[in-house]
Image (cartoon, rainbow, N blue to C red; front, top):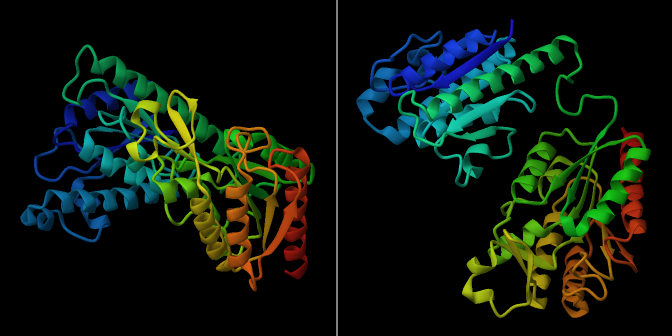
Length: 418
């Protein structure tokens, strides 16, 4: 039988969770309620009570109450909810999870959701869902639904929202359970018949990366493309660290430029690190290091308004990186690649790093690019990483195919040694 887990604070949201439970039962799924409340009494019974959730985090509910520290209690119950959901999934009793809440409830539930494997249906109905949801979603496949009104009773606005949520998670859970039963879903990411390759891409490097992806597909790989939007780079790093990739084709590094220059699409300082730590073969290029991404034009910081500016779309404005910034990016890329424990090769497109930076483009700046290349070469001197120059721009299909061929050869060499 398909089971949906409801996880939340049954003292403050018990009425709403009880309403959801009835909708889910009518939709033909079993329901397991997990209570993460702390202070008040639960409004409906839970199959897994709050005391059990606290113990799953290594403590007792009475201790959390006595400490009277809401922040610490929320963190502890989130830890217990994570352990509880992982156990239910391992037992085959979780085919989908649904939660509702404000900031506290969303924080607890989404931590537990983030721990579940990719593909397990996860739906969070939250009053926080129309803002920045990155802290809640992280690099997980969580579906966020805006509650419109606060989760405070069943009314003419909340009822249709919650009804849609119940029907959605019921449908997703049934599909997940059916696929698992038919053994169409791999036991884990990367356990299919074709080795997985991670590739990084932006709109301004699409042509080159697509050529590489098509060639790798011809060579027998399954290529997962990650959009370098901050969350995309973090997800690539997370999965690389878990060892699910046979190789990484990291041709687009614009998140590093955002990290250096204060752009909005940074993936953090650990970008371009996980594959090297894991010893995974990687081919790296310098795609889109000629730009930094900010928000809408009117939000552009005063300190960069004098720079070369281009409106990428109504939500994204880009500026050209300077020669000094490019030199620092070259040093940072080199330092990360010097630390790699696996085979690493760098493909340098000498004639441009993006559609904007190709010859004739608004960001074509050979001097700034040269500063990047020089710093990279200096930083890699004496390292195991191999560097290859190509007299073309990054979106020349021949460049993408050559990068793909290099990665394929590296993977083959590794397999031969093993």
